[in-house]
Amino acid sequence: MRLGVTNRERLTPEILDLYQAPFREAGAHRAFIRAAQGLGRGGLARVQAGLGAFAETPVRLIYGAKDRILPAVARTMDRVQATLPHAERTELADLGHFLQEDDPERVADLVAEFFLRS
Image (cartoon, rainbow, N blue to C red; front, side):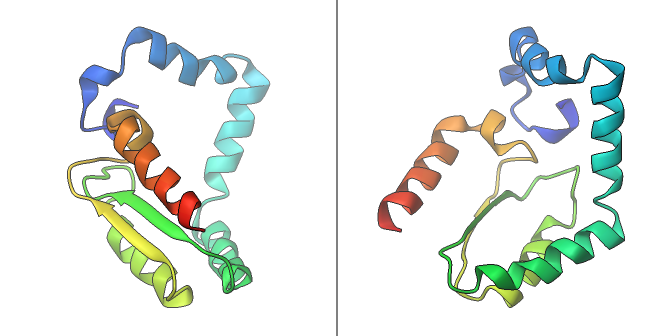
């Protein structure tokens, strides 16, 4: 979590506990690892292949430019937008991977604004 935010003071012990709680059991931890491994090249290729299903759906891409977990996130968003040229793209220059923790109010406002128009 600490690697994924730019606003580290928001990561209180209570917040970290909420994120970690689902993974305390061994089975849940293994499931998380399997899911993460599925996001390798083959898994991401399957995700990309499925993006065409959203060709007629309003889409908003929101990401943090300071993402240290996915440092190539801007290039990834380029590829997503090539597949979905109608997608609205919002780069948040000062945020990391966990946008909802870095600046929950701004992210909520962007999502709400999108849904109110859609």
